[in-house]
Picture 1 (cartoon, rainbow, N blue to C red):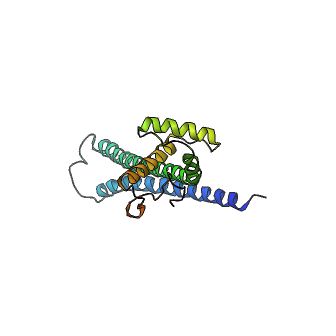
Picture 2 (cartoon, rainbow, N blue to C red):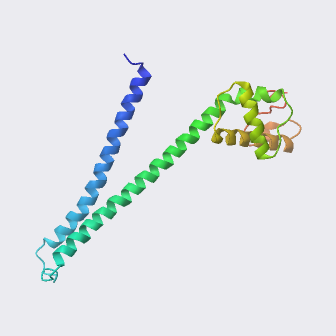
Picture 3 (cartoon, rainbow, N blue to C red):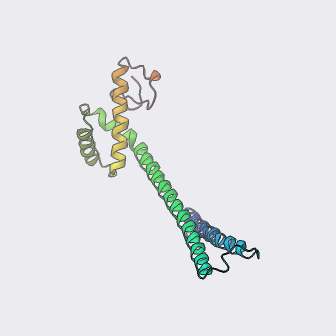
Length: 184
C-alpha cells in the first residue's frame, strides 16, 4: 500500500514517459512523411528526366533518407534543448524554494552577528560558515548565490533608504538589521 502522494508521482512519471514516446513517434512520423512526399512526387508518372539517369533512383533514395534523418535530428535536438531548459528552470525553482523556506531562520541568525561583508566572495564564505554552524540543510552553489543576491539587494535598499521607509523599495521587503519581519 503506497501513500497517495507516491502513487500520484508514479502515475505522473508514467504519463510523462508515454507523452515522450508519443512525441518521439510523431517526430519519426514527420521524418517518414518527408520521404513519402518525395516518393509521391516521383510516383505521379510525370516525365522529369531523372527516370533515364543511371543513378537517379539511388540518388533520390539517398537524398530522401538524408532529408528524413536531418528532419528527425533537428526535431530531436530541439526536444533535448527544451528539456534541458525546463530542467534548468526546475532546478532554479527548487533552489528558490529552498532559500525561501530557510529565509526566516537565516534572518534570525543574521540578527545576532555583525553585518555581512559587501564583497560577494567573502559574503558567500560567511554565509557558508553561518549556515554550517546553524544546523540548516546544506545549501548548494545556486542557493548560496541566490541568498547572497537577496542579501546584497537588501543591503542596497537599506543604504538608499536609511530612514526605514522600505515601502518605496522595489524587490524583497526584509530588513534583518531591525527584525526578521521588517518591523522596527
